Image 1 (tube, rainbow over the protein chains, first blue to last red):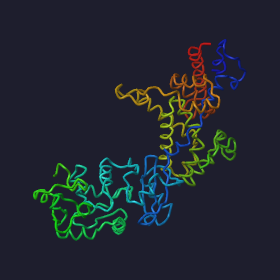
Image 2: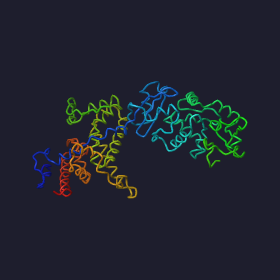
Image 3: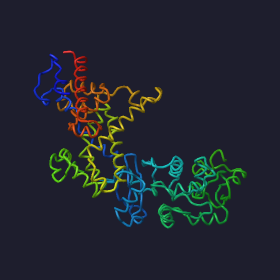
Image 4: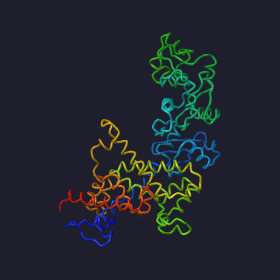
Length: 274
Length: 210
């Protein structure tokens, strides 16, 4: 089997050649090699930055899909390598240092608004993604009970599973699972520990002590008898109600029975439930 | 991140293996063992030319080649993160990566042929790409029409011949390394290359009457 004979098949229009290297076809084939886009590396690696936040520096890792992983410098003991180790426990991608933070990250941390950030939640289950996207809609300065999240995603009985999903949140602070607390007004668990949850809520100006006091008195919703609208206590609409018109409720059913309708802003009940 | 160029022929001096001469293996696997993530970035830059060119000329489409290349490197990284150091040290990175590329590509062909027509993959139902986006670049450096035509003709070759011609003549692999990757004797590999070239010439004369 000699390749030279095979190739030299006597086409009159082909340039005769002595060696394979002089074969115009072989030369043309070699020209088909191409450098390949260097940006392909972004589809393979993740990159990390360290940025300041209200609770100290954060390590943030991103893929080409968006922000994928967040840890506080405290959790990783200020150690880049420890952050990389934690990252690798959840992601099988090489992690490299980024030249600059992902678009919008610094403003988002500064304003406590993350709605415009891109997240890579592809490693999560469908349920976990649903939970996190519901939580992303909770505005800064406000809190919601775990049961509300469960209701929002159409799984009203899955309150404990919501808690687990939030405990597994790969991007805390940015997807604000710290804004989800227990119905009794206590903070509940947090990925980085309850004290950090408290610090974050304080930094956002949430009066969590007041929420707790109200809950202790069985008040979970607040209505205005002038507008006939009922809200969560941390809703800006609730905070505007003057004491003369202020009315507390222990449940949405009690409020709607009394003729109040749920606020469109903080959505204390899903339409079906209402 | 600077690309690390293969140092041809600079390794293999202390190695008993003969064909390490063509690959900067020790350098690359050494970096992987020291620091998997940094080493992997170096590996990417050392091999992206070969891996992407292979992917592009097998699939014939720029976007598919990007997907295939990214997937191959991701699989490689996943495998490496589970390998003990001595297993990494034994790797021949180029052959190994190209084996992954070929397996992924063959699987995608098989999946595509099994899928019902209504669910044909993107690249079968899409309107054809403009030959490929790189042609702008290639034209700028003086690519001839015949070269672009050749890229198209390559995709018309039967699978085995296409693989053989691409590995041998596009990315310039030695026959010995091809034999290893394809799991065939060198003689068989050479014959596949020859048949591929012959078929290309036939297609060429049909498509480009002169």
